[in-house]
Image (cartoon, rainbow, N blue to C red):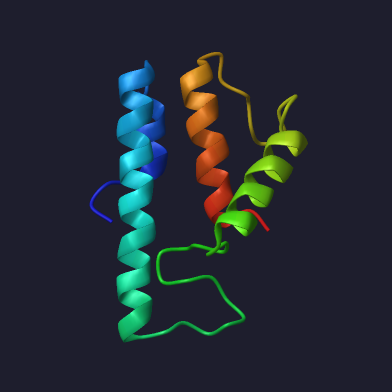
Length: 98
């Protein structure tokens, strides 16, 4: 992945930035698919780029569960005031939250 997704999220200020993030997240998913097709990771670990949820159902479920768990913030997470950043964080969590 060329760009750190966390850093991209921090720079989001509007819908345009959010859509750029979505495109990067999609690229990240495809890059992991390409890597995994050549050298599969253990089925008991995340993929090469950290994807835990490789199906749309698992991704959406993880997005929902992390969103619900963090709706009021967490011990080490302050919910941003910017709704576009929050939406990007929700989608990003769908990548890794189990």
